[in-house]
Image 1 (cartoon, rainbow, N blue to C red):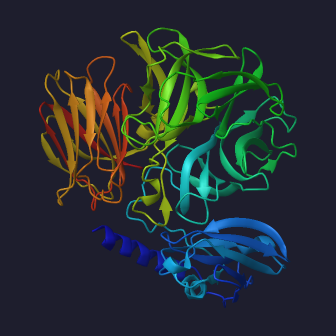
Image 2 (cartoon, one colour):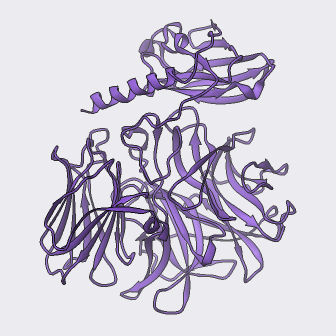
Image 3 (tube, rainbow, N blue to C red):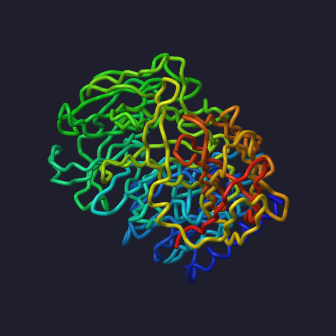
Length: 592
């Protein structure tokens, strides 16, 4: 089954690429050694379409314009067959002689002679590049890149009615490499418009994760309301850099004084910046090995080290990454507490990557955790929730979070080709207490309710209900009619026998999701799994499920539990079965 679907994806990708526009004549290819070739391009067209084979060894490419190196990138140039094409934009070097200097890292004994690679005869040129969806599993109401690889959400901010989302992006393949920031914009947190690449690698390195702030008071001197971006330059060492935008985030200028923060720490990255009104300073928190470093600044350029947090606290089974620090209200108390998000890989509760968090106080200089060091709290108990951070400048005091919906255990092997990875739906964050501890709540943002379409099915106490699943994108609301005394099971299934089984156990105060028979699972031994979450704060009274072609996100109706898991059914789940108790079930189509 996996092979047949893979062949369909490959064939569709090749046909779509071939239809982008009439191809221009190829350039000249010169073979200089068993691992070195040069291609003299035909840059009469805008794009040079590079053939990619994902299992091939990496090739290192240098783009030369009139003999000067203007770009370096890594591409898995096709050896035996072509999985898809990626575009190299030649219009950036108009009126110049452009040549590719290509070094293959493959072993000739394994891959064969360089001159026999399939890529050389398949390189084409076109004035357009087709990004129309060719993927069976591309979500309908989750953010995805138009093509290529995506991981961490970066630089999220709200301004003038628009939510801006940047993300880690590889334009030259659907696996991790060549990190850029690409930009998307939304007015409703559900439908997104692509704005293209925002930040590209430079001499300091590729562009790793970071954040953006709206500088309302011109503290940095770039202008009132300027967007200031902070990111990690990943070169020989990881350093922190700054870029700014005076047109609302559409274009950025890199700061001439980069890097702005350095340290002799191997894993030193992912700066998250916010305004701390009590001290009148900007705060930066970033990952430094197994700790989080905190810095302060008056002007966003010059930073003073304040403190570190993390030694001995929480889970340390992997690298700490992608922090966030925010103040949130505690439900029903009238008080507020600070929350430090800490994404970790590996070390998640069910293997691989996940988001842990800490609650406590922050005085502008130091974060103090209120829990015992051995206490570990997880934001989401699924396998596919990582790199979660929040939007700067969100309206009405909201804290809106979005994460990467994947897991590093298998992210590069997921059964898509045109693109890889999606983001989670947007979630509003809060705090609640249970048993003397304070916990983070995650509730689907109100925009998700506003996006609901028609009712596909409704039953007051249905135990078995088949509905028109359409393209497999819908929301299910489950309201428990009476007190649940024994385990209640909700099963989503299709005619092929593929299913996801979710169980709420009121005695154990747990919710679990079993995706071992959910559809395609054989691409990774780490994928078939049952994930289990604690349900805190009393009995669960309702459940919200967001199903979108390749994912299920489950939320307790009051936000006290969240679980995100990818699934790859061969056809949409169109049956919901409730057993073990009575529940009112409503199925809504998503996107009006």
